Image: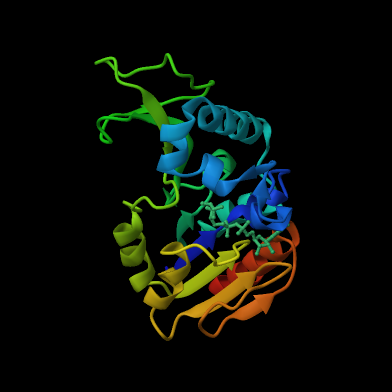
Length: 229
Ligand code: APR
């Protein structure tokens, strides 16, 4: 089986009703990123940051996977599919994808502020009185701006032996995620599904469509090819 690595961003979840960040004019649900998505913001006003993520978590848990998430599940019968997502929702998993790497963390997990290895599943709201077993505040298990991306090295390794790379719904503005394409082998075939595609930094076939339309069509074509060989 050939390997298909799929790099997804907020655009794939836009078709499930979740707002992207950069389409909203630089404000995310009315907030500047520096006020809610940085360690400094959490130190300054933890309740504001927790409220922001509580809202994100509620919205994500109410959203449903769309045709793009579902198509990627179908691809698994024909390719070794590895999804690398910048999204913190779990719509890929709820659609049924088996291998999903969350570069920027997950809304349904929290961790101890004092010990990053202490990670808990969490589906409700997170508040200031929620602490780990030793009385230390819990925080969202999210990679904030300015923090390291612990799974980046693993994502690079996944890219290195890709036969096909599919990029879906990301502005490719946030590093290091945006640099991942450079780690795919030169001969890997790359596709970019995005209604407003950005420069990808390497040769890509552009499919200027919404994810819910472009991804199922591309998946059908890839399945047709795999079945023909
Ligand atoms: N289908 C596909 N793509 C879409 C759709 C859609 N229906 N709607 C919008 N898009 C595209 C936009 O054209 C844009 O290129 O999705 C992209 C969204 O870009 P961003 O909002 O910048 O999201 P993303 O690239 O995932 O952001 C990366 O930045 O906000 C931080 O950490 C956060 O993981 C996030 C990272």
